[in-house]
Length: 466
Image 1 (tube, rainbow, N blue to C red):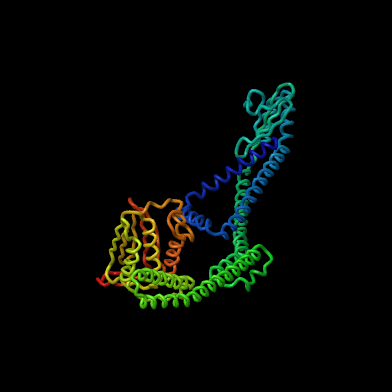
Image 2: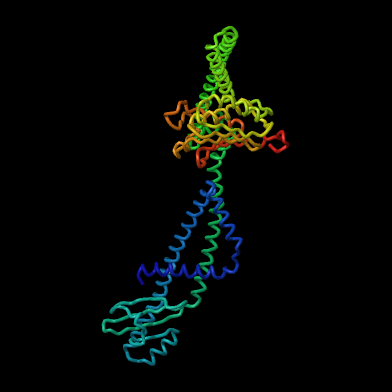
């Protein structure tokens, strides 16, 4: 038997014993085992520690199967040589007796040796070897056949039964499975222990980043491995972001603070001029200057509000309906002599908790945006307990612009004047108060929707839940 046949026979025996092992335990399997495996698989997809452990365990299992296969091939090779060593003298003895022509003596000798003896035509074709060759094959659970052909064309075959061979193989397979299960369990425990040690620094780093704890003084930064380099990179980026945030807050605060004084002086001067100047042609100019200064003052106050942290914002209950009505004069000025109808459907005395200056910023910029891009048709403001919507008949916003419309400096087109900061300020203002702003399309234009935070709603003047 060649090496290829040994390997094939070893694989066949391994498969046969494994199927027999599964059949014996098939009735013991339960559906809950399958559900447990599926749940564990889903957990492993989201856990790096579990994936590392399973990878190590899978490597151990693969090594076990390879060693088992090598062991079975070596076992078959050894058994074949032992059986051949046992059968060769018997075959040669019977062949010598057959050539002497004493058939009765041959059958008596075969019976005494407890073997089966075949010659020439009695031998199946698949057992016939090439002339001058011998071939050993296993033909049953415990039977081997050794076939020999001489140069004269005569074929001889002897069949020997090796008792208890199946029991030995079953015992060896059971022992191998027990050893494999023990080694797999040990490898699983070792794998989970190693994976926990490997992933623990990453988990610690994640916890510190999530909790906004300082990394610079952490022992993770002193590590010499990849986790240490990652921690030092995070710490460096953290320091850069902190320095940038401090510079931005100082700049915003300083600029806003320095602008307040000259704006107050200018506003006072315009009021004095309005009182002293009697020229009717100059009065509209002064009124325009006062409105511009009031807008600039509000913008400075807004910048200061946005520069603060959300927890530093002053929040109290205010009338959102009154705030919306205050915008009517602003919208009327923008839509003067334009073919656009402005409608406001407002709930009466809608009280919500928040920052009125930021709320005015959000509503003001959404209305200003609608007035800028609407050339004809209507602009409708609807305010209720859940939030408010601004619906216009402006051209639909392109999909590419919609994806970035709340980014700083993003504009719908270059034909309409503006800096591209309006919707960015709306987004930042909503984030500060926990509101949600979104955009959608309707048949004739665009709709901007703002949803109030649940904790800010309060009973309105009509008793509805706000």
